[in-house]
Image (cartoon, rainbow, N blue to C red; front, top):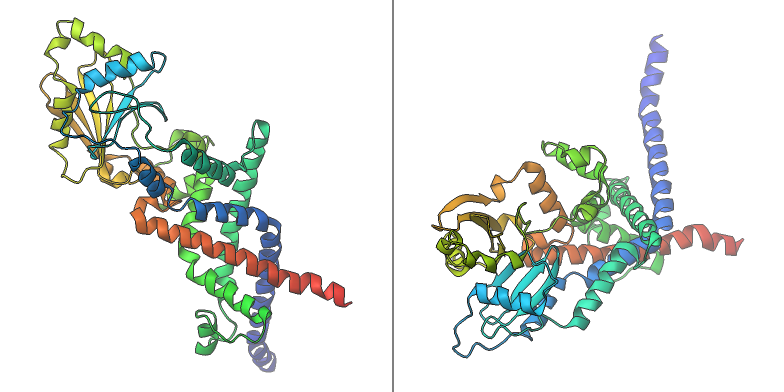
Length: 417
């Protein structure tokens, strides 16, 4: 019995090593097969992701080319701009207007998620907020990134393809982190998988090391980008995020409702009961409404609660019968919910009835908003976008080197035979 026990103890390390090697082989071949199967789709989403990295900044620069010169003119009252908007677009049911901190920028009217009309704040004339061609180019790239610009029923199929490919990419990143660990824990081996070299003996060695180097350096940002992409596409990923952070799962998500992409997480959510702009001018005809403060005064009251570095204000247009108005002040780039707060003002006195910031949101809403714009890096500003863009660029190299290594392993031996 003692001899048997000794013999088992001697063989245990080898048995454990064999088991680990078998598991590693299974993960490796699953990693390889999944990577080859989804390579084209991952490459496409990564390439369009790179092209969309600085979309917000490029559009802002393009919009600046269409701004007006104030030349000392006073700005028109917001009520007058609302009347001009109704005359220009009587069928548009605008429910909000956006005022920028840039005095040369237009006042924009919105109907839901869509922009309706942009007016010169000094003359009331309609103006362009940007190049239509530039907007069309980015819309095409975004559509290709999400559903390959398919239409009709094919769009739903394309969404599933990109969603599944994104989940496969998530598995590739996680399994790649495990496969990156070398079998021999020596500094020379780690160094070769962490740093580039100028003297690789051949292209196969170069691709092998590049695949490991790009993979490990981009692993953390890729995990953030890819997982938030899964959160946007699938309720189960969002529910997992809620539970991981201890947030209550929303009723729609718990019932298997649509992901964030369908639900449309956007800044500036109009409150229920607020109606279209055409209800507002009639307020002057009622005795009660005549005591209401002007929208400009209400806007200035809201800005008094915000530092001078605000970027834009979204004012939800009230109905005639509404005694309050909601104003959202944004000090960020439009995608940073932590830099926005919403005020509910009394229209008669200008008193701030409710002041609601990021910390006042339910935990699930904070997570949804953060995940939506963590996917593009915009929630972290310019440097977050840069990091997300570099991660997408690294993904292109991962696809290229992965396919090259797979070709040498799977296809070239067939030609030699």
